[in-house]
Image (tube, rainbow, N blue to C red; front, top):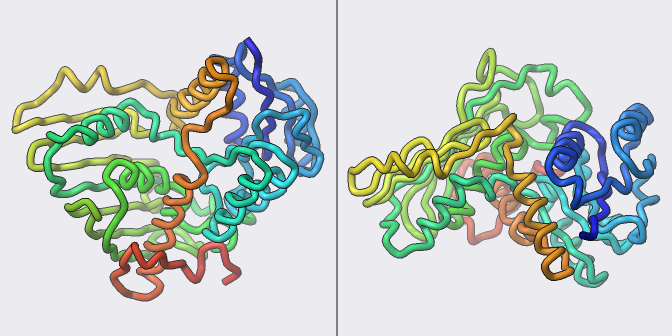
Amino acid sequence: MSKLKLAFIGLGRAAQHYAEVIKENLSDEYIFSVGVDQYAESRSKWEKENSGKTFASIDEVSKDDVDIAIITTPSGSHAENSKVLLQNGVNVLCEKPIGLNVEDVVANMALAKEKSVLYGGVFQNRLNKPIKYIENLFSQNDFGKIISASVKLQWCRLQDYYNDEWHGRWKTDGGVISQQAIHHIDALFYLFGPPEFLSGFSGNINNKLEAEDTFVASGTLLKGGFFTIEATTAVRPEDFSASLEVVTDKYQISVGGIALNELTRVKLDGVELSNELKENSETVKNGYGNGHYHMLKEISENFNDSGKIIFPTSAESSLDSIKYIHALYSSVENNSIISFSDDVRSAKLGQDV
């Protein structure tokens, strides 16, 4: 079995999570080839715990040393990091968000095509058992008409979280919907299709930051039915809940858990399908969930079966979620109902404000 060589760009908490997943479950399928971080302390820690070379600059990453470069740097760096690697002929798998500016990601997609390299994003919750369960149901013709679909994220981030050089700032991050709740918003529209019209409200309740610690929104789905979004990092003293729910004229389904990992309720025509719950739930160690494992396993299995690297989530599909975030922010900025088909842009996200 041939091992895929990985580079990690940014050796912080997210990269450490990947390393743990690989060492515990996928050590026969992946090898740590390169680690990149501007901080010597982070590089030293990585060298002690993992194999491979480390560099201070992304320019040192060569396609000869790497099969896939996984970007785990701060959000505002993602598009530029991707551009450098794609230009150098390296396959890029970028953590969320794939970029803050739509045009930067579109340009990177064109660059990837020009260089004949792969460019993908990471939305690991799409691979969770409860999400796959709903996806399979929805693909069937008897799922019913959607009445409402909703996501709720009630988390705690204390002020010190926002006191670094990038969290909560428009240029480098955005607020709760572009950082914490983007996974839940992605799951909502991934499952039930894009919004048609939407309207949002935002503010800061308990934290001081350029963007928002609380956002609520509602609107209509293009395929029919309504949606709502509630997201906040103002809860105290700890995370409270995160959930996704859908109600149709046949089904009522709830998903919970710290990583959308638990199918908590399923009713069909008023009858509780309790036997479905355990089979379509999974135990997780932390808020990252098991999706990174599922993603890496799928990549390695495809590679060993076909000799080709295939990313479960394309850059184009990842870009959809950035467009949702821009539309939500635009609604607040313009104090208006937004038509998603107008392909609007936020005047703040990814910009110097």
